[in-house]
Image (cartoon, rainbow, N blue to C red):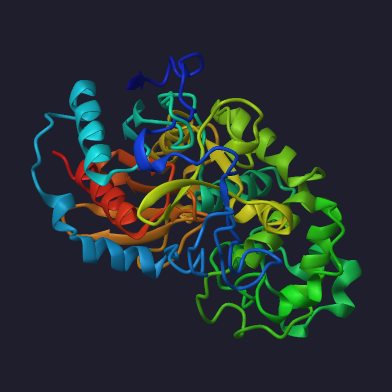
Length: 445
């Protein structure tokens, strides 16, 4: 186990050891010479609309890898109710402010054991103080268990959307971009090929999932795009953008909410156009570096050093699972939607920035920008599903997963508190229990 507690003035050098992977003994071990299970991500890549474990000995039936990944906004708000907002309202002990580090560690250890997941990490933010604990093993792939560390990065999935919203807000603050900048303005060379209704779609509408563009790369779009992609990320993002701007919108822009990873692809390209650099560089320059985060885009498994492995359930056993080929390339193209990987200690810095900004104590962005991200209530903000709850005030929530990791985060500005829980696996029960843990911690008095 490992613990990291930091305050506003001491965050920079405290990232001791937070990203790793260990193998658990028993049934979860891979047979020798059997590679990690690999899956196709439905709807997110140029693959088929189903997913199958492709380990040689795997008899797992096809399934939609993303079908069970909970969509944010209304889905998150419904989950908060279904899980019981009473969890947030109860007086669960823990004293004033964040629970004691030892108590938080004990809670994380107990939750991980009860959930049966390989590794779990919890970060809590109280005002400017960030506390991180980790529990468990980096992977279930070998007989020798390596413990997760405070520096180990989780793949954050759609938690990336809030970071993309922050990037766009920075460019707006620098007057390089406007919230109402349109597709026709940003991409004039493509204007004639755009659907007329999509020419006026704004960057903010895309970030709020109100642009009317398609949800994901799926169905006939996969078939059309597959022969057009080259493997060059920059060129292929442009190919995707032009393809989807040419399609008839799902609805009149601005009139409905439809969760769209393609919308974030377009928002990411808008940022590239305004910022004069690739999306990956912009995220480092405008989000990660200013917040002191050692975050990156990608998957921990690809870093070339021991670290976390993502897992899925196979025959009831957590099995290391990776993406490859065109499926992985498709995810790279959608980096603005789900590409971030970060330790939970680093992610705590991003959550802390939300609280600081919402109380007007941030030099990163002004208060109005953060209020735009976290409002209006009952709708999707800029990477956050937002609601007002009696006794709690404003609550912003989001979940993230590509299907092999899971992260759930809550921001409660009226309590000056934020909480996030992450595990290096994805499964229905693990998701429910991770959500419950986050809600319970967020509701402490």
